[in-house]
Image (cartoon, rainbow, N blue to C red; front, side, top):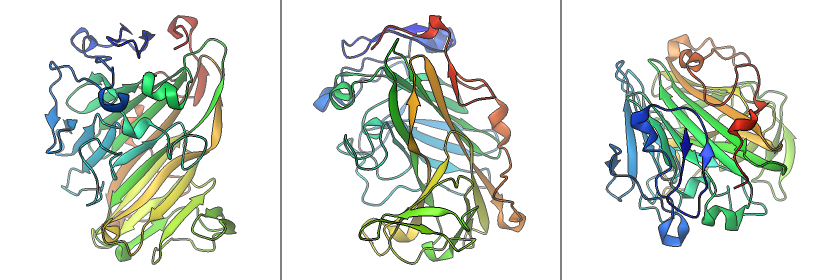
Length: 357
């Protein structure tokens, strides 16, 4: 498919082949109104609208599972499993009108995680993404440079984010492409995942934490420490980057379930965050277990990087989980976007590399 933007802020880009009925929906006009950040959504797309006016895609699976994904930030703000349990949280103080990034969901941090040379967590979470493909159980969203993003980070990139509901999992794939012909760039990527919990005091987070190094960002100054615990509990304000830990398992005694965060590709690190004691943020009802590529990824022209993360819920009775070797999500063997099974970074065929954006 070669899609053409109706805005001068975007350029043509060759991506995956899509059904003819969907092809016309790709790259809605993205002359981003209101400070250059809001995309025009084509009326032909069957979208729903939140009370704040933001458009979203509602996905359903025959198993009874459902998900909700906003075009604004390509943010997954709900995943209800086949048993009816909600696993994703949105903070009570979240702005749902597009005036700021949604405080909740699986929020994208790209091309920067945290503070740095550009704005906090980059720009991917506070722009509308285009719809590249839609179905009953999956949707793919796309972000390419426009005037707003170039003013912040003028690099030749394209991102796709696929969300797919399986019978027993929610599967996500973020694909980042360097669409240039000569320029390489570095980036960070993360899913700032807000996970719904019965109570922060009822939660333990298992994984290969014991003996790992972490950056405690709450220390003054921030300090690198070694984790002594096998399972993490949270009873204070928490913001820690666990380097090399990517197999967290959320155990919620109140829900009598556990949630495996299966990072099967790309995401190498885990960030745990909770604003403990902050009632306005609703600290008691969520914990952020973030899938992160903390060290910058160098991406040469024509190369692709993928981050693959699945949420896999199970009854807590099945909690004999070896966190260091998490089970593979059953839906991950379905069709992938722009990548082979064997590697996270590969070179596109020359025909798929458009002119520099």
